Every structure is written in C-alpha cells, then in structure tokens.
Length: 245
Image (cartoon, rainbow, N blue to C red; front, side):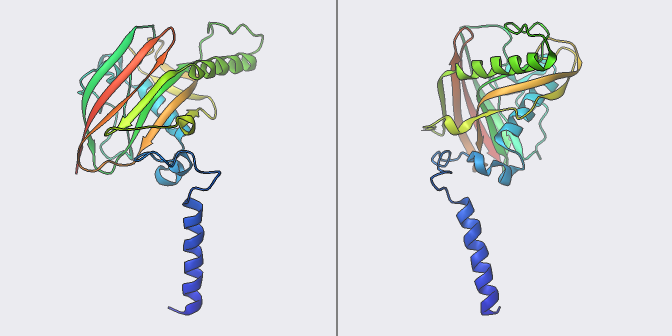
C-alpha cells in the first residue's frame, strides 16, 4: 500500500471516528451503559427512536387482545408478532384504556443473540378519535393539531420515570423522548387492544420515553422500567431476559 493511500485511509478513519465521538452537541445519551444514543440509532438499526416508537405502536395495534403481550404478566406472549430474525425485539408495558391504581408485571422472556431491545418506558399512543376530549375545533387540520398537542401534554405529565439494565439506572431522560414525526396509519384486527373498529385505522400518533438497548450478551439479564401518570396510575415492569445464541 502506498504512503499516499495510507494517508487517505487514515484521514477517512479519523473523520468517521470524529463523527461518532460525542462532543458538546452530542454528549446527551452517551453516558448510559448498554443504551444506543439516539443520534446513532439510524446508523446502527436503520431507524430513529421515533421510527421505532411508531413501529412499536403498529406492532401493539396488530395483535388481537386475547393474545396481547401487554395483557400477559408472565412473558409467555412476549414474542407474539415478532420474528426471531428481527433486528429489534420489542418489550411492552401495559396497554390500558382506563385508569388503574398500579400495573405490575414480572416476565421471563427469551431473546435471540444479536437483537437490539426496544423498551417503552413511558408513552402515550393513540388513534384519531372524532370525539377526543378537549378538541372542538372547526377544521380537520386544526383537530389533528389539537389531538397531537393533547398527547404531547400527557407525555409531559409523566413522573417517576425509571429504568435499569442489570442494576444500572438511567440518569438523564431528556435524550430519550421521542414522538411521531408525522401521523401514521395501522391495521387493527378484530378484538384489538384499543377495543375499536377493525381495519385500517388512523391517523395515529405517539409520544413518550423509550430506550433502544444494544444486543445483550448470552445469558440472563434483568430490565426494570416504569412511570406514573396522574389519573391513570403507576406502571412497573421487571423483565428477566434470557439471551440465546
């Protein structure tokens, strides 16, 4: 290899490393062990945090209520609607359409080696509803803006955010807030988790706090997460993750 080519390759490598090294503008989200920084999510997985949050919402909506992972407190249904070859494995909290004092679960889940893990720590995800409380505006566009703002306001109201991966807690939540970049549509089966009409549904929108975890090493790991939303209750989930080769 010539000296000139070696110099060029060294320069390219230096530029790439500089782009991936957190500076003052990129520092947030780099201090939590095992968590993919939001700025690197698309590079590593092909989607942003917001994209994965939308995909997670579509996954939630696609599963019949009677076999829905969010209604299962053991982990037996955790893999419903997920392929072992998927790049990302979705965890779930609880899909609730009415308030409750406290929602807890301790699940045992098997994940394939090499899969990233997406954790919905605290989120609001909903479908457009013509009778959405608090939105009585004259046009459809105004209605959608009002609908999105109400979801955003709800996400602003989360308290008690907590998550830990093998005992290591998240310290700063500000990098992990993500919302839909645009409204999206999804297909709902009969007996869906939102207890609404089957078929193509939307516009849909989500907002909340999410973690995208790097693939865990083979063996058993523990992920705990939860939050509180005034008027709706407290969520606390412990997932024992067995990673298999």
